[in-house]
Image 1 (cartoon, protein in one colour):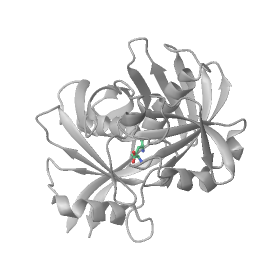
Image 2: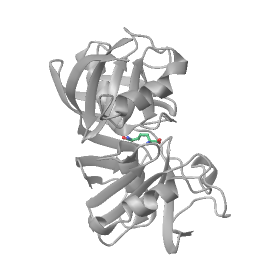
Image 3: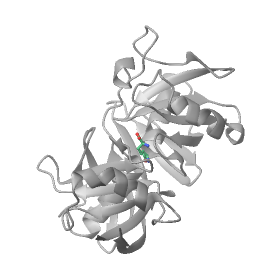
Image 4: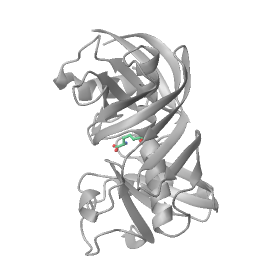
Length: 283
Ligand SMILES: N[C@H](CCC[C@H](N)C(=O)O)C(=O)O
């Protein structure tokens, strides 16, 4: 197959995008295609695959597949790239439009002209906070906020938030010493998370900034995670470490995202989206 693709990233969290409006792909090929394109040696190299597809539920649709071929229900960095692509390629007529995800619709607004969108704002909707919505098993209390979480020989405290996809957030005193590659993969697959989980470590810098590192479900360490940044700001506010309604700067490995958990409970994400390669993948 000769597959036209565009490689884009949000703060270094990169995906291979296929415009299904022009190039439909059979469903049974998608997981293997995600693994193939993500491979830096034999493929293109990315954190996964994203399809931009027609839908009657929104202006455009997004499906996201992790590096291991698993399908995620949402992707914040992917959404900003999809919005950029859709506006620049005239799949949509206006700067504000809706995007369907497996977790429901979101609304996006692009900033910049059709020749090059630099930044996108997304209303990510409401965070899901119930244990059953994460999902997480074990424990009785309906919301998981600073809950004791024994793992290997460590005893941590976990706060869980779903942005349509599951996130386990842990607070550390020094982000550079976060056990990202030691505990990340273990927590990702822990049986308390029946659908797996994205794992975030957070250091509070001040009342408007946090430092962030992530081990992603299905992709491992990535430079950035948009839904993770949203979940982390919500978790920090649930722990009374930050104030609701203020724009928080999240310093990720790949750059900064600006997140607000507003008084009406919507989570807003603002950040960059960039195109790096357009080409044909031979598979
Ligand atoms: N690994 C995630 C999907 C990608 C999310 C991330 N790249 C983002 O920007 O939100 C999951 O399986 O839920």
